[in-house]
Length: 176
Image (cartoon, rainbow, N blue to C red; front, side, top):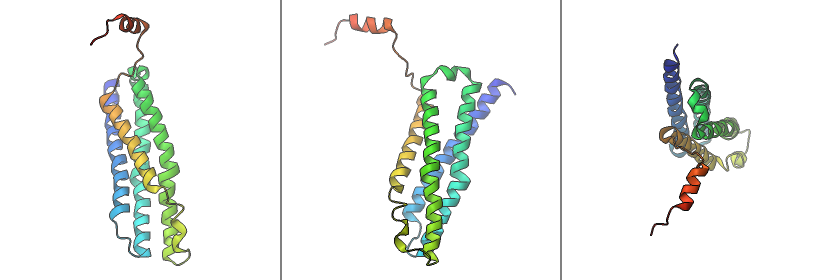
């Protein structure tokens, strides 16, 4: 496979994975906000759905986005010299870690505890501590996703100004 074809293939997978990632995060939020939760059984079902969404869409999309992004840096060597790419890579690694630590663990824990509540094996307040920061965590990861997408779309230069440019700027007359 040629480098050009490899780049296009990786870009396709990276873009598709980003769509899956953001879609899963938004789906998570929609389920939290609008799914029936009047009874313990309905709440447990909603939590099970969130857990499945995370396992089947969110985590695989996140993994594909991260791997395809890192492979893109390896295949397209000019990316290795661009600061926005490195910032995007660091944000992607941070997103991966925070999604695993926060979102995935909350989804899985909440599904288990809510099933125990529905079965009468746990008190109704058992989830309070585990889910106290769920919305803020979800919002933070969505913000990281938006930042990664923005960096990929706009590709800011983020270059240091050379000493010559700084000297020219300092010597230039001030405008009124």
